[in-house]
Image 1 (cartoon, rainbow, N blue to C red):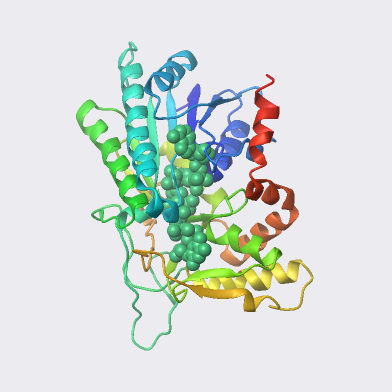
Image 2 (cartoon, helix red, strand yellow):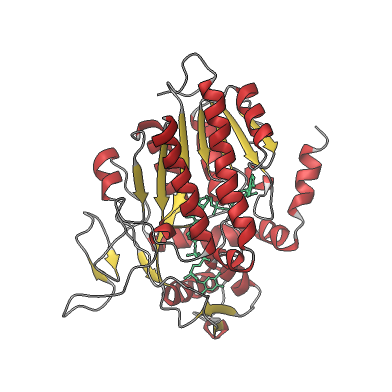
Length: 378
Ligand code: NAD
Ligand code: TDX
């Protein structure tokens, strides 16, 4: 169904900025309201190319502020919400779990309650409304490594019709029980439970999706891929946790944004969809690929910077393997990832090297000056 006004929370962050860009361009008759607190992770420069679009509006606000959320929903006649705002970095959650509980649990609850109060006040109530909550595969816990006799990992699996390399024969399914290990994943799990509880208790129309690791342009350089590209560029050490044996399932961020668009418009209320790349990689293999790609694009010798790889103390509670089974999304809505990983990595590394000003701004903290210049004078 068509929506008239969609509130996207966390739209100045990594994935949110791709979702805002996609929706603003693709749905010119729909108003896109980006609500973001601009924490260290939010950067309005991520949306330079859309900020003058007539159907786009940015509001700096905290999702935990219930009155402001309700006021915005009422004044903008919001009929759809795509909720991405969150504290998202596992290492930060280990140091400061309170901030994670506040935003990811209480912030989600505040948005749910505001949506419920506003939509229940309308004559049509929940008709044509949707609260779409973006979550992570990390809520399911960790999988083990295994491989069939006579094969070497990664092995090819039939879990998907396409290209799928796996490090084990089990995958997260929508029906799996939650088993989060980090304060980050525990806070996301709690948020997901509240969304489902609001559907079951009040009838609030909602959908939850759980996605695997994203990569691509505009990711804050604290996460593995942009951090390491930046470190290779400046010839700084590459801190690989443990032995680099942990496995993640990687998805190009624009493929995630496409899935969000599809599910927002065609997904079934009260359903959960897993979104994944069918693309498992060991950290150490990604790091080697990043060194090779970055060195080549910088015109340095082949793998010249391999000796920057430094094995450091492991992350506490480090989940060994994540792997998503997104068969349901493929079978029901026809979604498939569009990019092979090597192609996506090439595009991504090139983007960071072509946008060194962006990298320098976020690593120096200068990017908030852009916000002051752009928005405070309006
Ligand atoms: P990010 O850290 O890059 O961006 C988060 C955004 O939320 C920032 O713009 C920040 O300013 C904003 N924000 C934080 N607290 C806020 C608050 N209290 N009020 C309003 N805005 C606030 O995160 P991301 O990587 O783009 O992740 C977006 C969402 O997708 C999160 O919910 C995350 O859990 C989920 N997710 C991420 C990945 C991934 O690989 N990055 C994978 C699966 C799911
Ligand atoms: O310096 C590092 N060294 C290292 O070995 C960093 C930053 C990471 N790692 C390892 C830890 C992980 O096994 O690389 C892997 C990826 O780490 P992150 O980029 O921090 O991502 P991860 O912890 O897997 O979580 C990400 O995917 C799921 C996002 O940050 C979450 O928001 C998302 O929900």
